[in-house]
Length: 108
Ligand SMILES: [Zn+2]
Ligand SMILES: [Zn+2]
Image 1 (cartoon, rainbow, N blue to C red):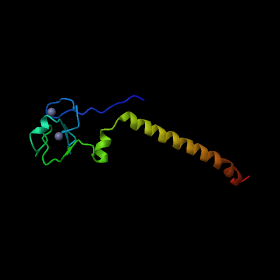
Image 2 (cartoon, rainbow, N blue to C red):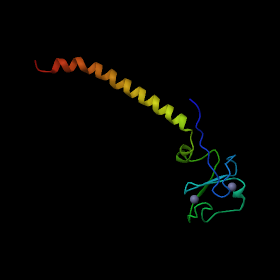
Image 3 (cartoon, protein in one colour):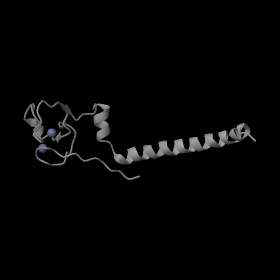
Image 4 (cartoon, protein in one colour):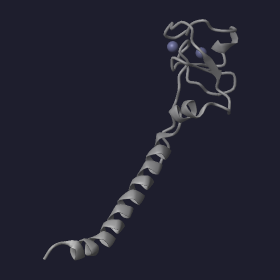
């Protein structure tokens, strides 16, 4: 399956984030590139202006939910497909096992 890589943009200069190093993600969901990050700390988001936001460096130790938001949708769809295929097969298999037993139980 092909890749549908998520491409965040900087909320200040609107350039594509070319590297994670030095870039930030804010709790409002906006991203800031490594160039715009150089001006110290942020009280508010330079993109949407939201106050009292938290920022995280886009390193390799991002919380799972942040990482998941940025994950490749193609991978997510593939694993969803595999789970679905397994569960459908399981139910079919189990129904096939149950079916003769249910016939034994039914009143004649
Ligand atoms: Zn920028
Ligand atoms: Zn924002």
